[in-house]
Amino acid sequence: MPCSTVFLKMLYSKANTAFDRIEIANTADILIIFAANSFMSTLKFIEKAQSTFEAHSTTERAPQMKAYMKDQFEFLGLSRPERNEIQKELLPLFPINDAKTLEAIVRKLWKLKFREYHYLALDILAKKRKLIPELSFDFLNFLVENNQWWDSIDTICSKVIGPYYLFHKQQYKTDLKVWWESENFWKRRVCIIFQLTFKDKTDLDFLTKRILENSSSKEFFLQKAIGWALREYSKTNPKWVIGFVKENELKPLSRREALRLIGKE
Image 1: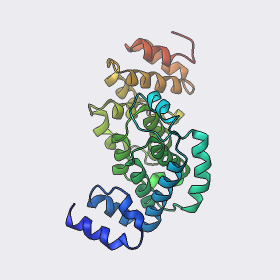
Image 2 (image 1 turned 135 degrees about the horizontal axis):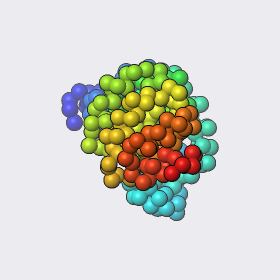
Image 3 (image 1 turned 90 degrees about the vertical axis):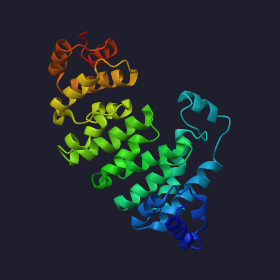
Image 4 (image 1 turned 90 degrees about the horizontal axis):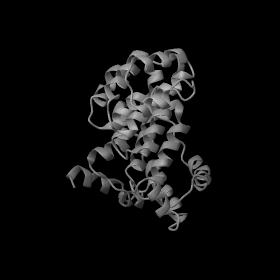
């Protein structure tokens, strides 16, 4: 462990024993938390979340939840209603009033082992939508790069990345280049579906490019994303979607999904 990390841990170890129970990967992790206005509150929140969630864990249900997610993650076995009840009591105890604190808490939750903590992080982001425009792209990239699966990626798109770029108009044209050129299909999926809620504000030129770049891919989650993006935009402009599907060669899955609401396959 780097000397600076040891020093910072020693500095705060007497203030809160929770510090030593939370994984600190490197000095950068601590500096992120230092930047938050409520350093100790962040630590206490993580400790409280862990102790409360684990106290309600259900070993009988956990294997089923893990299997449903194709063994991608470990689970505590908490259902959505159970998590909601816990969060109703937990979240008011730790107000989050600035983007730095929001990033610090979500980063720590995102690094924990069990999937329920990732869901908690996403719920917190959804509740703090007014702070979304103040988040950093480094933070967005962190979310997208880690714990990748359809449930988290799609929620990040709808609750975080979409709202972020509705506010920071046109910035996605430069920010997201590193994603649409990536070999990682989840990052490319984000570039296809982050505009799902944009309606008449959808950048059709950007969407067209991202679809055509991936239209020949055999990856299910990309083909599904293409169909989903087109189907959603068909609610705003069905004529454009019909024309696009006729003029471009799409995989059967993408074509079927695109025209589902229109009924013209």
